[in-house]
Amino acid sequence: MSSDEITPKPSRRPRARGAPATAPARVADAFHVEETWRQTCRALVAPLERAFTITALRAACARLTEAAARQGLTILEEPLFGLKGHPGEDPPHRWEYEAVLPIRGAARPEGDVAVARIDGGMHLAARTPRGLGGLKGLYGHVLGTCLPERKQELMRPYILHRVHRLAGGEEREPEQAIAVYVPAVLSIKPVPVPASEAEA
Image 1: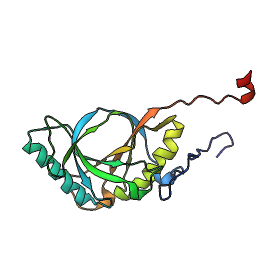
Image 2: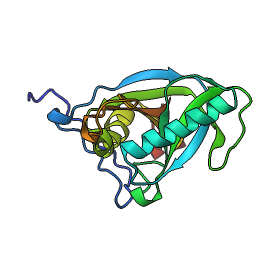
Image 3: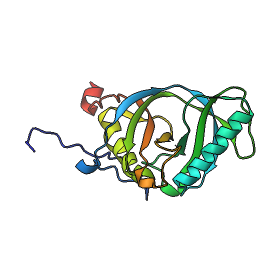
């Protein structure tokens, strides 16, 4: 590496015990991150166990799809799952997951199926091919490397995920690619003014 190249630095913000490290990803684990825009919508949601599997996620999404069919709702996109928590600040035992099915129509709760608002706006999208086991590394890369470099920050502690090949295929979780959508907002912080200049 030449002396003119800048080495990415991790965020200096204190990290909660157990939260993923925010050091830059290794070359082998490099993630492609791009900006995307999501529309605000309503969704049917159902809770997931903290240590859920792809099989459990598939079953929860099937329940949401059946509930949407019974209520005559329009399904707007494929099922997702959401993380309620900030992986860079909250320890894993405080994370909460839920299955999410974006819908349109007069939805109503059914048992543990609730109706929620899923906020849209600017998101940073990235993907890991390592399944559920690759999420902590992806969180650390996006939150610790991409957001500080792009002058953006986690706007709200709710991260959406989409599992590819969720509807079929074998139950081999490492082969399930997962796309992650991190809500972000441009945050240009004011440049600090030295005390001597401020007094003048």
